Amino acid sequence: MSQETVQILIDMGFQKEKAEKSVLMTGNKGVEPAMEWLLAHNDDELGPSTSQEGSAPNIKSESNTSSSTVAKSYKCEDCNKLFTDTTALEYHAMKSGHSNFAESTEEKKPLTEEEKKEQMKKLEERLKEKRKEREAREKEEELEREKIRIRSGKEMAAAKKKLEDENIKKIMDERKREKQEEKIARDRVKAQIEADKLARKKLYGQVSAEEQPKQVLPVAVSPQKQTKDYTETKLQIRLTNGQTIVQTFNVKEMMAAVRVYIELNRSDGDAPFCLMTSFPRKVFTSDDYEKPLDELGLVPSAVLILTKPQQ
Image (tube, rainbow, N blue to C red):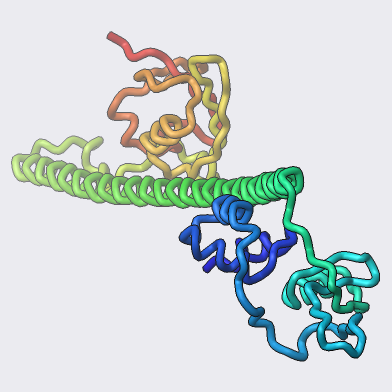
């Protein structure tokens, strides 16, 4: 049994027993069916009240010593309201704070049609208020859920971006290591070939005076020694829509890392592009993307321009 439905009916002035019975008779389907049942059976008798004795307020008897006078109701001497049983009287005392009650021989009249309509109107207004309160509460809960969803989405996006950056850095570091190993291997092969050539020339006495002091180094020396003191370079990248993005890279980063950064942060669409410098004019080829930035002369700063791929 819904105690909330019973309490609403009691608040409207119905007896507790009748309110409980109406909820049971209507299958606990809500306030409105129970209210309609009460209005249709308002004059039905329920039998003796089940309220506990001693819990009711202090009630004075209006009857005289004659035992023939029978009390038909209870009366609140503070507001002159009549009650058919002690349950309704106790509820009124709790709600109003009144404490002066007496037995009365006056019989409480049943509700008239106008009173029933007024009670139904009050009920509808109460139901509308409850519905508005529920809708407002549901709206607040939905708004809170939406805030949580947005916050979770931002956190997931940030975590995904961080993971992508870490993966890109890991890939570029791996490619850089592989390229360095390949370069060292090529230099060793070149050195061995030069050593074999010199050995053959010495064997046949064909070594000139100029060739004698030459020695083949195992690792090629970078022609841009002036960049060895720089650890970072600042690149200004001009997009095809006229906007510019600026980013700092390690001088040992491959040119391919710059291209990946542009693809992730560009605002001019996703059309294919090439990279070039204007002073001096140079269009970078696919081989250049495997070279570090200091070797390409893009240190300590440079301007890169996005252009359409050459046909």
